[in-house]
Image (cartoon, rainbow, N blue to C red; front, side, top):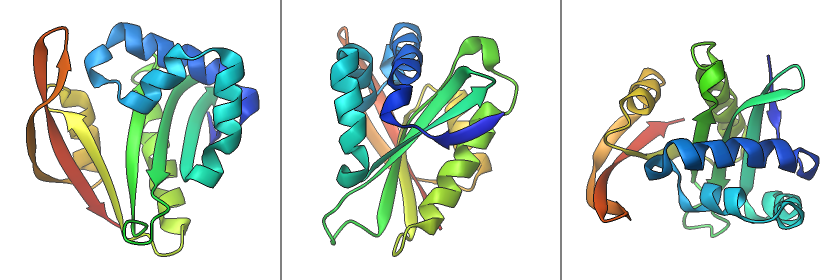
Length: 168
């Protein structure tokens, strides 16, 4: 198992995982991950080439040549907000679940966030019905900061978000 930052050369693998996530659990897929799933491959490669300059850092977990899961973090460039990063887009392909891939992606994101100068907190939002993700984040020390009711509307169904934070 190898976890590493994704480059534009990984766009096809990344998009394959994002599309599976969107088909499997659309209520858990945020806007940037959804854009990655829906854009054409050439556009995704261009986006990924620009990500670092925009403060976006995607990661993938590979078993051999197969990308089994992805996750990302973003850091706003505005100095008022650059003390924190936002974790998003964690998804493990169903056939690879139960192999500690989520744990490995979390460990790498946390270590990477700690390596960024001035970063003091990691934040995230998770759909309150996504119990496996909530438990994973709590295991890493994320604590609830509150609930945003009806934060997402998908096909007329509203979902609440739990806002979570980890002191780094």
